[in-house]
Amino acid sequence: MRSIWTSASYLLALGWRTSRRRLVVSVVLLAVGHLSAPIAALMLGAFSEAALSGRTAQAVTLSVGIALVLVFDLTMTHFAHLTYYELGQLEQLALTQEVAAVVNGGPGIDAHDDPRFSETLTMVTDRLLQVRAALEAALLLGSAVLQGLLTAAVLASVDPWLALLPLAAVPAVLASTRAQRIVDDARTATASHLQLARHMVDLGTTAASAKEIRLFGVQDAVVERHRNAWRTVSDRLTTAQARGALLRASGQIGFAAAYGLAIWLVVRGAVSGNVGIGQVVLTLTLSVQVGGQVATTLGLLSKLQNAGLVVELISRLRSIASPVPGPTPSTATLPAVLRGEIRLEDVSFAYPGTDRPILDNVSFSIPAGSTVALVGENGAGKSTLVKLICGLYRPTSGRILVDGIDLRELPLEQWQARVATLFQDFARLELRLRENVGVGRLEAMEDDDKLWRALDAARTRPLVSKVPGGLDGLIGHAYGDGSELSGGQWQSLGLARALMRTDPLLLLLDEPAAALDAAAEHALFERFAANSAAVGTTNGAVTLFVSHRFSTVRLAQHIIVLGQGRVIESGTHDALMAHQGIYHEMFTLQAGAYER
Image (cartoon, rainbow, N blue to C red):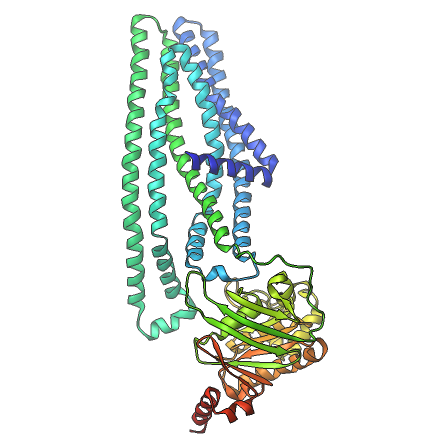
């Protein structure tokens, strides 16, 4: 019951913040409408007495009054529904925005590596659509309680014992609450299986994976994995629903017994002459109403429990996504021009929930205006290191300094605003071309001159002419019939997006050319290098890139070799080749492969 009260009060408070007018109108209309039913029952009892006593005029008047009250009830309920439906939609939007803020609110991405986060997010999104119905349940439940109190008062006027009839619904309510908790626990327990089932659907229906699934002939295997996962979810939920149904039935049987006893009391009074026929009709009518109120209330409670779980899950999601407290940001600000270096001091990192370090006491510096390449085998920690420097992760230990300023002492958004990046898994925003590039510098999205400069720097102007509508043309097919782009064209837009930032202190490429041939990669790095040289001169910006192709790596002024989360070697290309260590071995192997 506590969770029901919590969810009801939360939804009403949210409604107050979202639209006070709609909430007040809904409450008033529902209250007035629901009070009409007991009044109609009283009038029906009086009508029965008048009709049997031959008071025709009074009976006709009462019959017209009953009809008007019932019409009034329907009218008030109808307009209340229109109002609280709109309010529910607004609340659903507000909660969706709150979830989006939790998921995307922080500058880091640590939470996305936590399996609890993705599991909780799945459960939240699965229930968000039930919020509107839950608000309706909260409002109707309040009206039902008010109606029940008035009904009990009227019944007490016939026989004081009849006032207890609404209380007989308490066991049914408690049983329904327990039944819903059983179902909710089953949903929580099967959340991971539901995630797997949805993932199998995505694999089998999205274009990105369809090619390989067909060529490898694993359609049946994907379907079977989906079937098994879904069967696990279905079997567990079916068992929970069956247990819940038995509990609900036991509670309703108890109420039915109380209902029968109430009828017996009234009939006994009528036989003894202590109760008039009008009172019998009144009691029967109100008893039927109480039965309907109980059935309605049980359904409303289930919806409210679902809403309470949404509130709890959002709170859990927020706690998982909350960053680990660090030093309080000082009054220090980033320099407009980098004059010293970006330095890593004994930086270590382990993903949430694990003790295995991905990076272990990494230390090196990147002088202002220089170009540094990161190399190493897969799993060496290159991409993780890049994300740490970007501020997407916080080091488990150690420091990252920018001109002597510890990133932990700065608002990360301030640092990230001075970072221009292009990742291997760069975003493909299937929106307008303007938006795809403009998000790199949001305030300049509608500035055509700045967009064209970024596109020219990325040598992507010819692509725009091929898209119907130019800058305002749609690309991709996710939300409409937009232009289809090749991987290289998408990548060019990603580069233009990065180059929208004209005053970065860090330019970063994290294996964006992994899927390109050598010539295309060289062209990409040429474009990036031209821009990095310009901002390196004006801003002292450093350029950091990760690549497996050593023909590109050797262009860097300094090379850092990672292995098993540590810095193994560092130096210029010539120095590392002369050292004949790991770098020499990797370079020689790749060069030999090209010679063959």
